[in-house]
Amino acid sequence: MNRRPGRRTWSLAVHGGAGVNRGEALLEDRAAEIRAALRDVLAAGARLLERGGSSLDAVEETVRLLEDSPLFNAGRGSVFNARGEIELEASVMDGRTLGTGAVAGLRGIRNPVVLARRVMERSPHVFLYGEGAAAFASAEGIEAADEAWFWTAHRWKALEAARRSPPAVPPSGEHGTVGAVAIDRHGNLAAATSTGGLTNKWPGRVGDSPIIGAGCFASNDSCAVSCTGQGEFFIRATVARDIAAAIEYAGEDVQRAADLAVHHRLSALGGEGGAIAVDTAGTVAFAFNTETM
Ligand code: ASP
Image (cartoon, rainbow, N blue to C red; front, side, top):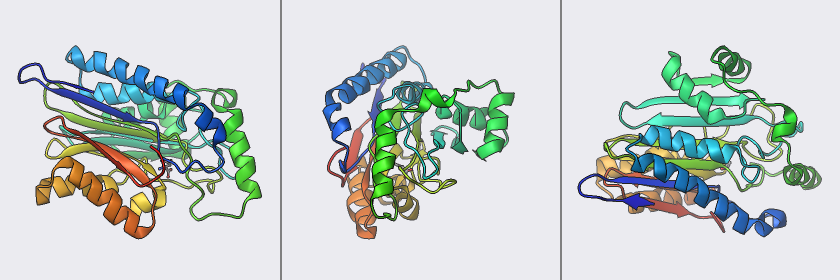
C-alpha cells in the first residue's frame, strides 16, 4: 500500500509467511480469513503512516497485531517445538540509525516484537536470548501471557503430524511467520519480523527471523526487508542483507535485488521461502520460491 501526495511518500507492506502447504489443509480453508486479517493490519499501519507516524511505529504495530492473531505463526498461534513448547523470536531494525533489537528462545511474552524494540531502545545490546530476555522483559514491564494464550489446535495437530513423519532437515516449512517493511513521510525505512519458528524444531533452535541480515534488515541507504521460509537457508544466504547490498553496491532495483537473492542465491542452496522489501523511493517488491506467500 502506498501514497504519494506531492513529495511526501509512504509505503507499507506486510507478509504472513511463505510455505508449501504440506498437511496444512486447515490453514488453506482459512485463506480468506488470513487475507482479511492481513488487510486489516495493513489498514491500521496505513492510518499511522498517513498521519505522519514513523515507519518504526508502523512495522512494530502491524507485526504486533499479527502476533495477536491466532492465524499466524508468531506470538499467539505459534508452532510447537519438539518438546511441545512454543519458543518465540522477533527483530526490528531502524533504517535511519541502523539501530536494531532482536529476541529469541522466548517463552510467555505476548508480543516479541515489542520486546525487540525495547532491546533496541533501552538496552546497550542488540540481541537477547531465553531467560535473560525474559528477565529484561519483566524489568521493562513487557506484557506476559500464559501458555493457553499461545496454544492453537491446528499447530498442535501439525506437531503430531510432524512427529509421525520421518525427520526433515530442516523441519518442514509452516505458513505464518509475519513481517512488515515501511518507509514513512520523513523518508525513514524500518523492518520487523516475528515467528514461532518451525514445527518440531529442536528446543533452542534459532532461525533467521531474529538474525539481522538474514530475516530482517533496514537501511536508509538501500531498503527495508523482511523474510520468511526455511531459516537455516536464509541465515546461510544472508538474504535480507544481500537484497540491500545488491541495491547499495550494484545499483540493482529493489525487485531485481529481491529476485536475485531469492531465486538465485537461496534457490541455489536448496532453500524455500520469500521476502518483501521497500526501497528509498517507496517501491515495494516481493519474491518467493514457495507455492504460496
Ligand atoms: N523463517 C522462519 C524460521 O525459520 C520460519 C518461517 O518463516 O516460516 O524460523
